[in-house]
Length: 185
Image 1: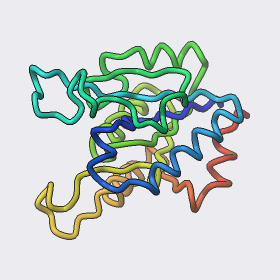
Image 2 (image 1 turned 90 degrees about the vertical axis):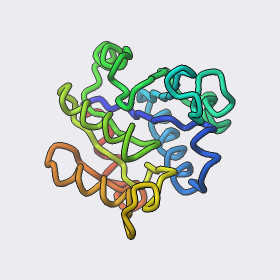
Image 3 (image 1 turned 90 degrees about the horizontal axis):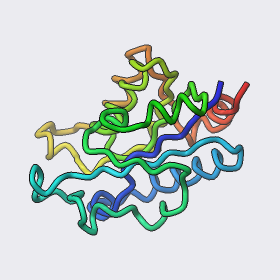
């Protein structure tokens, strides 16, 4: 089993909207783990077109679309995407196949959109998928979705876990289990 860490959208336009320090720390530690074991790290950069989303904080060419400074030299591949799933209209599947990757580890932003869609599409493409819940985040909250008391991370982590298709782990709580799973057998 060969693993790959998919880091979704660590960009200025997301990371300047809300305090996401804990998530960033977890993601950076995971990147170091993968690199130390010579396993692939792929970073995604979401790009919205000015035409379709003129007010997006991730508009093409904007400062918000740029990668957060902590993620400049952290990945073998940087894939630009314009849809929630890292598989749609990208060469992700081909890259993974050429490297014989069969296990994806999902981290990044936004949990309820890009992380969720990439995880689900990964399963549909035949990959084993592990979703690291505490290494995902979002700038949205209960007010965004008009759902008082909503814990977005817990809700989407639970949905994925209940699917019995995607394993959900916590980096902090399951670090040894996570480390054993990501190493090739």
